[in-house]
Length: 503
Image 1 (cartoon, rainbow, N blue to C red):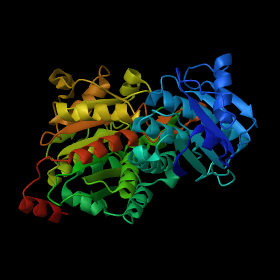
Image 2 (tube, rainbow, N blue to C red):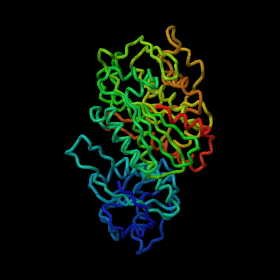
Image 3 (tube, helix red, strand yellow):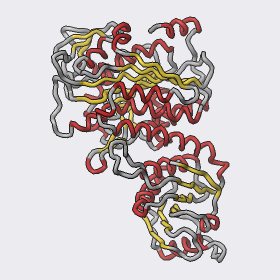
């Protein structure tokens, strides 16, 4: 998608050569003074005085070839109170409506007074509404909308917000692309190839470890999950260096189960096809690095992706097996369908070598989180108040919402085992929390947060597909951190060099 930012008044928008003109009209907008020179403003004023356009965000009124307007199709859309959330709803509804006419160029006019958050919301909503998956549908044409011109009162005032939004869209769409791919088109090896391709972007490096390297590192928990599949595991390490080498990085850990049968603890057949989405945490990490490569912010970021299939054969992990994690802790596997935490725990231990300022893991981890929060907010867990607050605020800014859940020690009682240091699952009650408590055991050495995106990473039903979340939240957090100078203390240089030398 090609986005362009322009300073446009209603009079200028009226003469813009575009296939469709979308005009956001917020509640309480001042009526324009009648003017023959501004046909569009006059038309909007007439519509408002007649009461033909409800103020509620997303309500539409179509005008066909109105007098004095160059665009053949004009769509007026209520923008509610003009907030970022209202703008998102309005733009999404409008772009969805104009798609039927297959326009190649769309001009989207925002009223004066809208800030950078509204601009960001408009760009991301336009991209989301026009997205089309085509990788395994060769007979389907790509999105008809090739260019969106965003018209604002003062382009220079929102230039940085627009640039961030455009880069975030590129990241979201990469995450969607890989999330939507069927498992035979998204193996651990292919996912690693997508990560390696990001190495062509500025300041990004990629390293991929295979089964031998993972075994040498002692990642017995990760390796155990992969042992039932003919597809070899991959451990992907991405590095973005936008700041000084001694600045402590933020580490993102993305769950990369490219298909999840549940293993021996087999999932029911209904909707098992959706288990191709079990790598959406990994896809979000790829998306973040795609956006970082475009924006080049002054921050250091590491991405860790343990990628594997959870399949069945004679070597598959069995309930009751005990595995040894990279941390040295032993784990009794009571349910092989609780495999995400088994691969993440080794990645969280690996993250320690980077002396991180913060570690955030992102995973489609539990159905319990879907029950708790549905598809509106991702679950947020954190052992660090400042990190939790920053992530929650980032989600609000990005309209990629999360909700913090507790981590009381009492929730870990169900993880006790008679045969290992910890069991990989507790009872059904509080399942999203007990999963987070399991991960917390492996993240004690740094500020840590866990995002459970099981309810937000994809949609089911007729709208089935990846959402690209939480790329928006993560980029909002990282860009705010970069703006603040990311002043967290770094590890001593000598220790950092030693860590990098470890395979």
